[in-house]
Length: 306
Figure: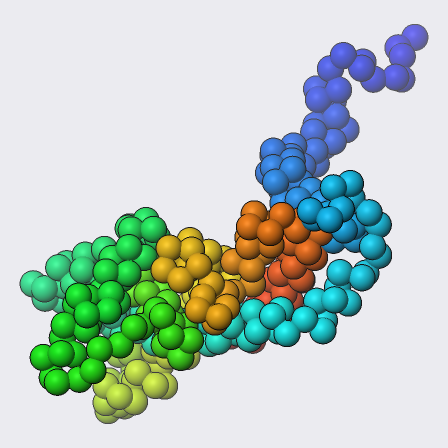
C-alpha cells in the first residue's frame, strides 16, 4: 500500500511543494535588503529615540533617565527655535529656485545644437565635485576684499561685503552655494522627463495651432509634475542633510544664523558631548522626514497623468 505522506526530502518536487517554494521566493529575495534596512536604518532610529529619554552629557557621565524632559527643554529653547527657522529658510531658499533652474537648464540642453553637450557638462560639473571642495571654492569667492565677488563689486564702485561674517547675508551665501552645487543634479531628472514626454500630444497641439508658450504651460509643465514631485522630495531631503559645507563655510555662525537642524545635531553630539539632546534632535529630524515622506505619497497619487 502506497504512503499518502509526501517525501520530506524533496518537497519542491511535488505540486504543493513547488507552490510553497514559489510563494517563499519573493521573501527570500527581499531578505538581504530587509536585513540591511533593519541594521542601518531602523535600529539607529530606535537607538536615537531611546537615547532621547536619558540625560547623557558631561554633567551625567552615566546616562540618567529624564523622560520627556529634554523635549520640554527644547520646546522653550530659543536657540532650537532659531535652528528650526534656519532649516525652514534653507529649504525655502534652495528647493524652489533649484527646481526652476533645473527645469530651465533641462529645457536649454534638450534643444539640438553644437553647444548642447558643452552646456550639459558645464551645468553638471559642480555635481561631481565633493561638497568640501565646492564649499572651499565659494569660501574663496566670498572672501572679503580679495574674493572674486568683492573684486567684481569694487569694479562698480560698490562697497565690500563680509558675506559669511554677517547674519543678514551668511544664510543667503550658503543657500547660493547649495543651489550651484545641486542644480545640475536636478537638471538630469528633468532632462530624462522631457525626453520621455509623448510626441503625439505635441503633434496634436501643433495641429490646433498652439504656440510654444501655450504648449509649455498646458503640456510640458503638467506632464512633468511626477518628475517635479520626485525632484522636490530629493531636494528637501538634501536640504535636511546639509552639514559639510556649513562646517567649512560658517560652522553655524555668525550668531547661529546658519545652523540647520542636522548641523545642530552634530554640534550637540561632537562639540558639546550632549548625546541626550543630540538623540532628541535626531528623533525630531526623523519625524519631520517621515512627515515629508507621507506628504510625498499623498501628493504622488494626484500628479500622475495617464
